[in-house]
Image 1 (cartoon, one colour):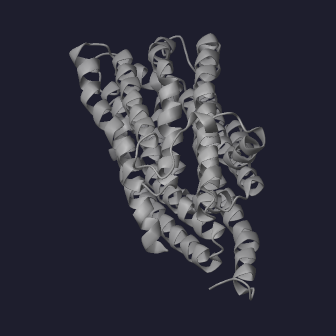
Image 2 (image 1 turned 90 degrees about the vertical axis):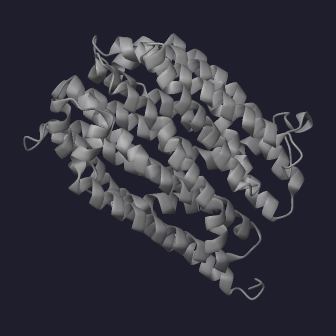
Image 3 (image 1 turned 90 degrees about the horizontal axis):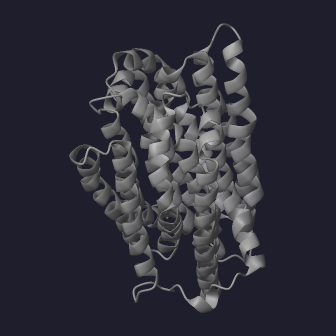
Length: 447
């Protein structure tokens, strides 16, 4: 199992490493603009919740459909697998255009609700005006890439991300500095790179190398099937949306207690967290189709071996990240911005925020198992528990107690990691793991 998981996961991890450059390079460049760098950096940070909500819908249909597609493939039901993929493609395209329209219509009140000030609003607006044009490309590139991986083409899935990242790396300095476009240049480079990734995915899924391809005959909405897709994908959707909700609560609270400088610090912290969670996402996403396939084939002992390998790997990586971030916090602040005040105030904040990061390994692993084995209710519950039930209320409440102020905002995350991570994984052991052992012990199951 570990070989199969790594075969799928290594290309995804490499892709996620490239994705880090894709997502972070804009912020690095903007954070070092010759004028108004701190305000421009904070302005882009205010758009994170919107960007994440758009990505959440790719989880709803991409991450929701891909495990079902893998299970169908494991059972040898290729027509069902193809129908799932084609239905998800239609929903991703339609949702992309709807989201683009909604965000354009409500942009200003939404951004002020998210913590914008009169000083940072112009930068956030300039970035979003252009970025939103690429929403359909984001939906197709990210959402349909899950189906490339579900068919077993991990390297091809990696190329999707790598190609977009390469285009973004080349275009960013040209547009931002060469054409002096600032944040607008960063947004333009991003949507062009997303368009390239989307075209790459569609071309592969309509070409001869795919095991099953996109076909018009299978694109007629199958509502019962889409209900199953969304039921499974809602966990990833909720997790992404609650991440956005947390960012909104953090930015709004920090604006009240500390002003623009602390909103900028949270932008740095979110960027650093993204830097380190993406490889873990690559591993768990690589494990999911392998777990789903073996579960569909009735090979429950192999599923348990896969869960163990995934958990140990995630724990080792997140523990290493925890040690690095609490010993060298200023290093990561300097990566994104060299403003003296931001570095001085941001280093202790980053140390607080990452105190419980190693516990995230249990959240990631537990969530991956629930999704891979088609347990949508559990996946949704633990997504909501950590963010909506624990983080957001603590973010709003802790600054008022014990003189914590802004430190209360940064403490909410590690508290949720301990409670949410432990609850998610222990419950998985008491339910899913127990069921797998019972099924494996049944006489009719082939070992």
